[in-house]
Image (tube, rainbow, N blue to C red):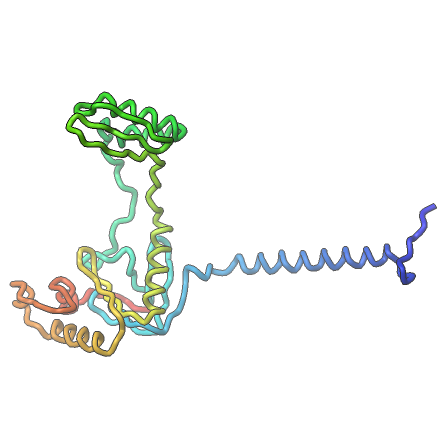
Length: 258
């Protein structure tokens, strides 16, 4: 026969335990429900609205507040693509798959990449790279220092340390967009002036002080009023805007700001 145990104050311990179990289950359900709802929202790190700063894009002034967002494999301000920057024609750069690079010639670096792709451990990569270098012309001897480093002693008396640590893979387009998003957000929150220029044209980033702002606006105004000859014969001279950037203010790209 099972007997209920009483607590020190005569309370029913089984009943108390049932109550605690119901509370725990209820709290867990609330946490799971909230997590599911939050997961459906756009991550905060991919979109932000910033009221500070001053932005020009491809010869056009954008208007605050600035809505900074990652859209696919691009970063946009007020709907205007600012990364990757547009080409001079106003077209977006081709981000499609690129043809495979030519087969690398047999070299120390090619050997390193080949061994890494095979999953060879670091100490073995170091040993085999050292052996490869030891038979090269002009090499007197090779000494493995530790996994990841070996020394090459050449016949001309020079020596060189070679690092064999794993080569970091290039950042993905998503990582590049996130890095650019964070950089632009920091610049705008720091009240910077940003001049976004097309591919092959130098942009500009500087403090949004009264002096810098007035100098920049004066050069923009001069570029917009300049004659065609000033750009055709590259007569333009400016302290803040280079020739190609000033030419973009003279003939702005057509963009649609949201």
